[in-house]
Length: 454
Image (cartoon, rainbow, N blue to C red; front, top):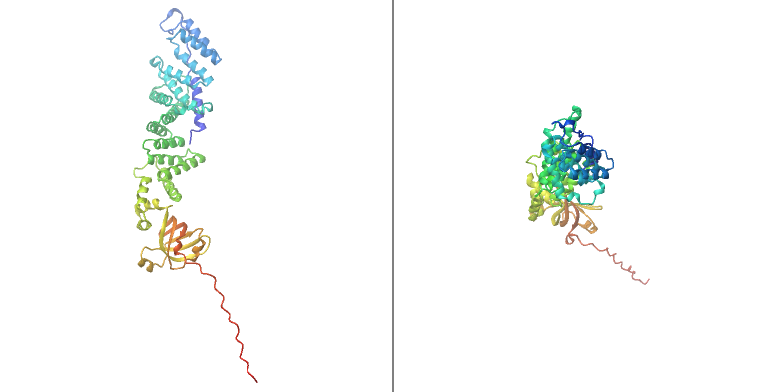
């Protein structure tokens, strides 16, 4: 689940706001008489700046500003100059230059107030997002640019540090200011999380997404991204990844399409984590349990876990159909792990006693599992049904006969205990030979009575 159009809209709106009206910086002309309170620049310098500010063509504005900086490299008007650069580069969609200019403004340090520096860092962060979202940059590999991502992370961290200290500008309503100030940490942490993922700093990404969710816990996209961040760590933190992806599925902020998409993806991750051979029905059961738990708790309980492929493989290594029977009948945690290991596997030559043969397509043999003559003699009730596919001659198998079959174990009932098999074939030697057609009786010619003379 990628960033939605909503987030692109937020990024664009914030960027335009910061590059325009939000930076309401108005340079003042120097006062007459050289008073101490006058700005530290000359009237000629001021007029040169105002000429650039009034230029509407972005190319001409940039040339004007270049000339100004060349002539006045240490001007006290540089903070205003950098804003004008940003406006012009924004009109050109020259994202690298917007970032470069924002960094220059932030680098002025104490020469500008905290709000201006914050806006500079925020512009860097938002422009990074805007640059990656621009369709014109598709295929340029910007997401793989680690230096670009790391620069954005640093700008985000600086913005978050400054956020508590910035003051409400004059003329801004309290409600509007409070709403905007509450939105900023969400936007900054979200974009910083993406930048950290692009820089392969998956651990750092988890910190940004957690900070975002602390403010906006119902953000389904950030919750999913937090799961992704855990999964890309080395080694992957699979349980945390599954948990937060499940949280995204059940999030109040998720659309049905988003929920379905993440659920499908999560199911694939769990199947892969468990080796890829687990029955689909078992993964569905694990998914349902996980979704129920994740929907009721923000944090994963330490007790929650799923057996992985290595655990399942260790069980399969020495597993036989007899051990499967014994483990499943015993119940408990071992039976759960055994069933994960056994379900969906094909077992060769499973021995049994035929209790009933149900004709049809497929033929279903109801069989009692036996491993000794004594068990065979005592067996009167089936504990398996076996669907025999593509072997019509198996219909000749007789009740109470001994058979061996190879089939796929697909399900089991714990109470009463019963195994279900599919795609089975009965061992050829256990199928009675087809009886040939009956020969018609030999008809002897009628015997003629012996003649007597009268």
